[in-house]
Length: 197
Image (cartoon, rainbow, N blue to C red):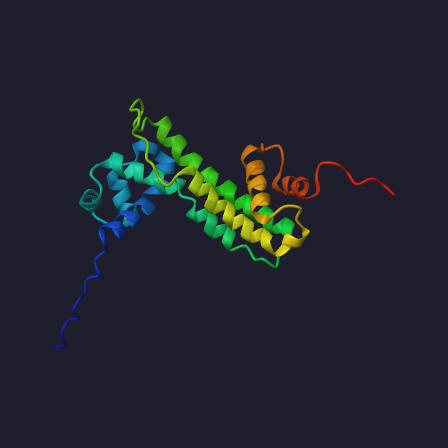
């Protein structure tokens, strides 16, 4: 008679790792259902028991706050921008960076919008989750874009850090009327056509 193999439990997660895993599973559900999402749905998506959620979050509101904080973090955009190959032409690098930032802003806007529209903490002043400061987030994204510009520094009129800030400013005020490729074209070459010789 052969012995049954001994099942070993996977190593336990720290509370921080468990929180991060739960938030990662919850984010798509929060974006879809807002405050109507249930902790049971989140537990199923995370592959855990519902009680596990309440070992690391005091209540559902704290979990929803953690989802908002995660959606606001610039890490995803910075990683995406940092992965853009520096051997691509500058216009392509900037277009890819603009797309990465647009995806970050859309994700943040989706989560914030659905939570607000479904009543998360509505009417409670001062209860807004505070991730890193907006300035710190913008600095991280700006530095990543400056790194993209660095190979072409000799072609730039200003240091890469300043050009990066101008580019970010354009991205934040652009409208859907201007496609990314046209925005980059105007940014790099101006709005005036070259005069014919």
